[in-house]
Length: 597
Image (cartoon, rainbow, N blue to C red; front, side, top):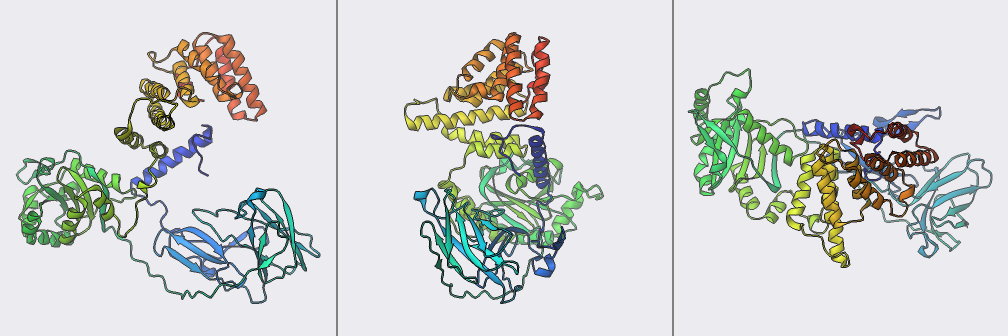
């Protein structure tokens, strides 16, 4: 289960989770599949302590990459049908349940809560218990708000009744607010609405039949061909190539006056030959639109190929291309590969042909994996290069509204997500991008708008400190945490980090026991701080750094007592080790001080 870094303690379990998540993220960026074809599964309880896989027999095992699952009695026939959502096509599927016979026993309830009685209108969290005339077993179901990954089943609570269930007497509802209520006069095989404090069940009517004809699943074959239009053009690094005479040519310089299409091709590639021929026949049109094509050979990058620049030039001429050409080198290929990875999270190795459309000014606007039509290149340049909004609209194959305008991204949340995957540069980039637009000196905390801005900028600088800590850059981390305190002077998390760094830093220019203790004492004035083991642990480290070892010992003993009361043996061992150091008149060495409490 995912854990929130700000609420979970950095124990070995959390660290292991983050390491595994980082490894998984890197595998995806290297081209591995996150999931592949994860078919939906169905398991039958055999009644003998195990389950049998009936996925294929029941119809669940379809060749789709399953994600969400919602249960509902869609056709109102007394059994639960299923809606599936998939990561691959078809995105939405319906499975109609036709297994139970018509004589099956069942009953369904829809709960309506009363907010005045501390129960939401949807009655989430309420329970329904069926009461039978003679039954030793309890039949209870709880109404949940969500089921599984991004899924919400019907809010109707459905019971299937078996032979052991005798005559139904009543339904007892334990409402989410704590009240209990019984509803009598119920009949099986019907749907009932139970409204809080009404005491009487109301039969629900049937919906009109909705026809959903069955259709066969037709899935396209997997292919590496793709037309990727960037929603946000990417600034390219300095790019160059060797022409067939061995002279270096700058692509970046060329983009100062024209758009450039970099095309990577191989002599053995039949689609490459057809594409290059099409580029040549449309060269006048492309250049009139401000597009120059540079065809770069990649044969020689394969150690098994012995092709020379002269061989590549002859092959290019044979294909009928007369424009600029040359040889791609490992550096150019690596930079272009990184451009794809910065745009597409899941990516296999580049195919040939592959082309990169770079707009004037050096902005990568589109990537074409596989052959591309000349008309698509011209259309993309016109749409993507016009303005940022045009790029957004052209980047997706359907109309819609981009939520960024209405739900601005939280730079700190984005940075934390990047840190979970160990992408520290990406974590810094989201913060820097925010500061470029919103950085301001600390405002008057008495004015609500300025106080809100102070809190946001304080969080941004605190996150910078967390990134620097991960990189063991203690001086930069301390500076960032101190900047955060300028915006929010009473921020406990920042005070804790500052005091801890000053007490335990391996960098002698950062470690300062007296300052550490000053910040720690100020922090301990916060309500509840004197009973917080993490803050007390920092205070003890500060006492030790200031050569006040008796105080460090007493504080650590209190931490151990609090951990014992909270049954945290995993943390007690660490504190016992620190206690021994303080008893020997030693401060915490920097390896123990890398992670703040």
